[in-house]
Image (cartoon, rainbow, N blue to C red; front, top):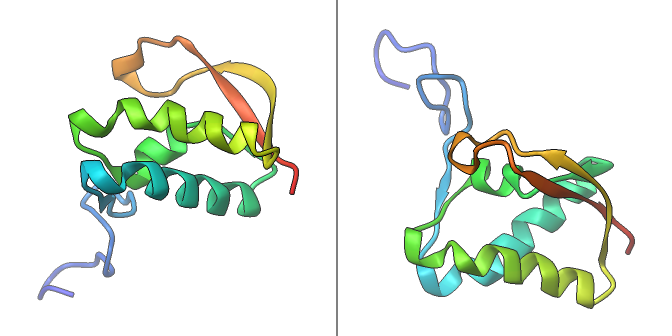
Length: 102
């Protein structure tokens, strides 16, 4: 911790956890791993939490939806409802709420 700073390791100035930077090539696997970890800790979740936890380059963004859809095709997660996104860049569009099933 820096002298005079009250922030712990991995915290940013606005009390948000530091986002883990991923490359385009690791986006698919990182999104799946992160989303499964989130769902193990929470009953349900949206892709908003993946965006909050991972720093994904613009060219890797199309992989996010495909990675989540692949988990659904594997039978590991299921859609339970729609909810407006909390991400400002998405302008409040609806996103799926997912639940872990195995």
